[in-house]
Image (cartoon, rainbow, N blue to C red; front, side):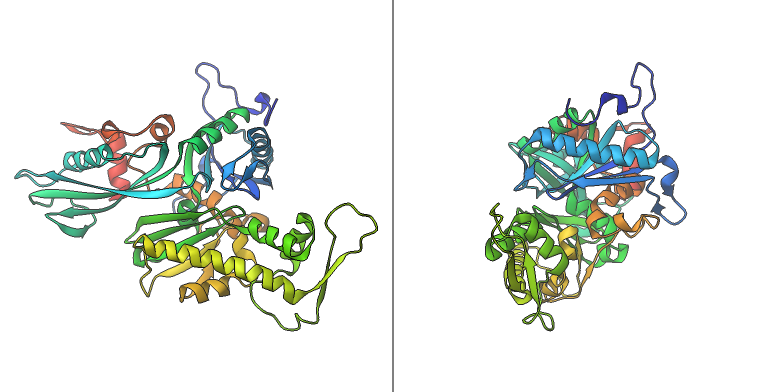
Length: 441
């Protein structure tokens, strides 16, 4: 049997209640982490959350932005969830997975509907959303986020809430974030092997942003770069809306591989050198400081590899700089060049390498800070750093939104259609539509 034992699941017989918890699973190439939040973990008074249990293990079976061994991935998922369950004292039946696998990308669709003589109503908004959803055509890709960017009335953009306004036409820009269908199916199968329900998928840079960015940054413009082991991804924000995401299958593990090749050491030795002594910027006395690493291979007579610390920097810096420059250029090509005042925040485990922040300042020519989960004040130090922003972000989204135009249940079950728009009764909105419109306008 792979992954968690079925005995770990709560009873799910006929009429059995679901476990009253929210579980976030961060699946990356370097680690798998699980955060669990109980209902009393939502603190509305100061819009924070309390994580009841956290667990993380070394990832297995994920490489190059894809799941390459489903049994190993399922086992790692099961171990991380079990650790979080023990810490929380609560069982988990399903998880929302945050990840950067699957060649994630964003796509914009636009819709425009004609209006009558009456003020704009909830039904008009639902009609515009339905028309936008009908235009989504993403062969071999699975939508995982569907978020409104902006409304317009008679072409006048920047409208936050068009209800009660009058005009001849109502316009909507919708952002759809998607992943490859093959990666989605592999992920879904891994969760089945681990005896867990897949309750949703969230793009790592999107939920990392929710944990690391301030509201002012989302309003005025910001770029959140999530630097993981196997990928580097980014989310662009402005006007309180997600505007674009970009993803590269290059991350911290590529730096480790470069060190192993360049210094003729093992991957384990390279990872240790990177963690303990690595830097992307020059430091004092690095020419005279010598480092020791194990040799590659199993020759017992081979002596250790001894290199000056300066050589480590000459291997690390080019890879990190190239990755950041490639991301910058892709954003420009997508028409997402940052405004002069836009902020930049780094998250993810690879962002903690010495000198990465300074290199980002140079590449993007703006102030850069390391991001941490901003509204989860009670996290233990071991789970409160940049590497855990995405897991915390899933819980923050569950507590405070933004709600999406299409429910996670429908996104997980099938491709979306116009019929998935919020429904409005003649006498008033149904609860789902009311909740979505209230939370997003």
